[in-house]
Image (tube, rainbow, N blue to C red; front, side, top):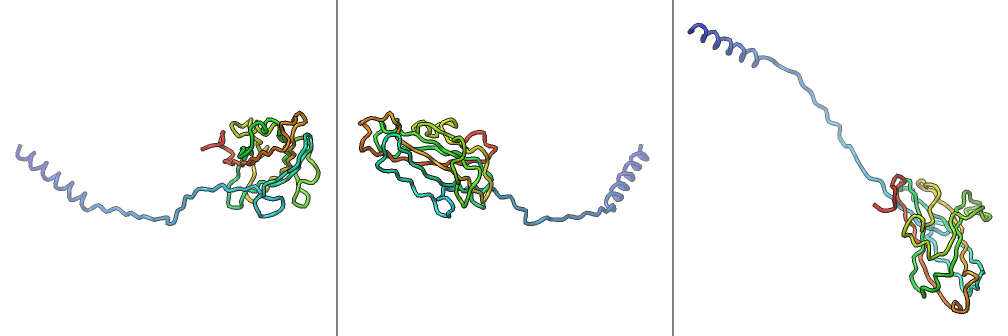
Length: 193
């Protein structure tokens, strides 16, 4: 038994000496300066063929059926990501009854001539009553038919008029509204975060 105990001690000592004398090579390398950054989305509604934001249109003295026309472009800034966008109207002042009789047609131009749409392009992209395009849903918005890349403009033409069914209650009345643009990345199934 003493011999067996001695043998176990000798073997254990030999294993410790052998383990202590083994050497392993190792190395390491660092890749510095890795970056993860997020994109941005920035667009505006501009005067056609300019670098300035669109000035509000103003049609005065309009009669039922008389059409006012305006054009502008939605410009996606160079540092922005690709986006989809929609436009809608928000009333700011005026008697609510006046919203019931204002109609519009919006045309998204697929081309431009000298920085504008040229002639009226085919069928309207959207049309209806201004009051119904309040942005409350996709159906209540003027949705761009395609995405827009960085440093690209989409040209739009608008026609707006007081419906011919407007009677004397609409004489000498004013309604003011905003055209609101809302953009998001194309993969977003909705319009908010």
